[in-house]
Length: 350
Image 1 (spheres, rainbow, N blue to C red):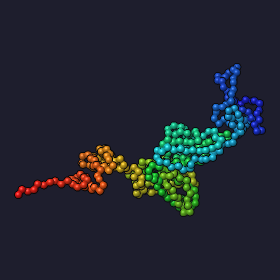
Image 2: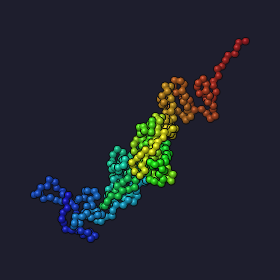
Image 3: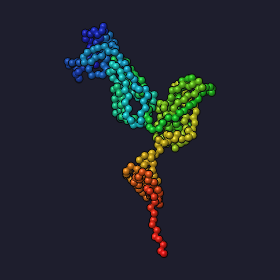
Image 4: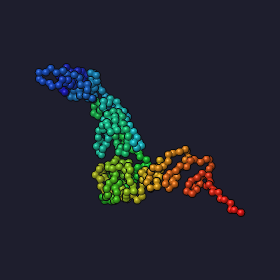
């Protein structure tokens, strides 16, 4: 690359030089070298005036140099998006005078550029596509950086939540006090909560952070499970493998220098969350075989509508459908439509 001292060109009163690229390779001092317009480099806006100062908002397309307005976002991504687990997701942004797009995901506290692959596409377009949003995407944050012929512009943030059945949040409140025991009223604070096993200081199973503001009584209220994920996941958590505790830490300056605030044991199992992992009766997964192993093994194939299966002590047997109003009775361990059959008795001899 080189700037060549050509005759200056006047564009809206600005004098500038144009950027060229060398076409030939293996150049020596005695070699005649051709030059051409740099039509390849995306977003090439580096046109300079006679003092070699970059001229902002210039665009070179198809051999023509024009003034261009800076990129402007006309529609940011939706701010909050909730999808079922493993559903496809598309996050879009709209902008004028855009020359390049770069989608980013917040990893910890760092915005990291995304690339195509591993179920992600459109990382450099106006629409980011995730083929299947599993639980690793829960509580994720995305944004787009858009480049034009001036400084890049950044879109608003899209918060993505992945729903996996029952609610995965726990309502939580805490009272914030300073080192003197005084209530911290109407103040922005940073909060980190952690789910720990066996004790408040036990192994951290899951943790997240929140940026909150105390009320007039020094109280913060939030949903545990809806914050910015720091470590771990609550997906598939075995709530019976407890006891579990919630530990709360706070930074009174609203930053991330957390100090221990308190904690408490979850005295009752969050049954709704446990139910999400308990066996479903659908497809026979809640039934038990003679060996006591849960599963549908040995069940007869589905018959006509209304057919039923029963266990005779050795195997599953099918009962055909009855008729409207017909009673089902239990005869010698066998469900039977109608009445139990009678056994004829011979009359005594006279």
